Amino acid sequence: MAIRLLEGTYPSELAALLGVRPYTVQSILASLEREAIIVSRLMGRTRMVSLNPRYFAHAELSALLWKLGEHDMDLQTRLAARRRRPRRAGKPGLL
Picture 1: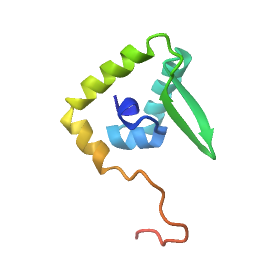
Picture 2: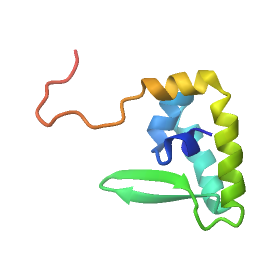
Picture 3: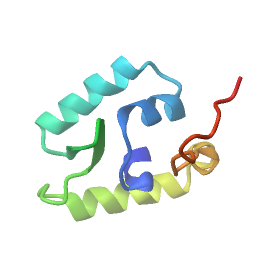
């Protein structure tokens, strides 16, 4: 649901959102990619994942995940709290 609601994300963001280890997310994403349900692409050094628009049941799966996601208030709260844009270049880090 998170991949559909975000319409594109990366494994470490999913791991942080769901509160699981990155390795767990990566293994699940690998199996979904083998089944052609999701696709991934490199953007710089980051591997972005999204639903596969060429998947035979893309429209139905997308609609189902959207419907399930709009009723999961906990997930929506966590998604709304995520920072979706990069920090300004040269900005000092948090201590």
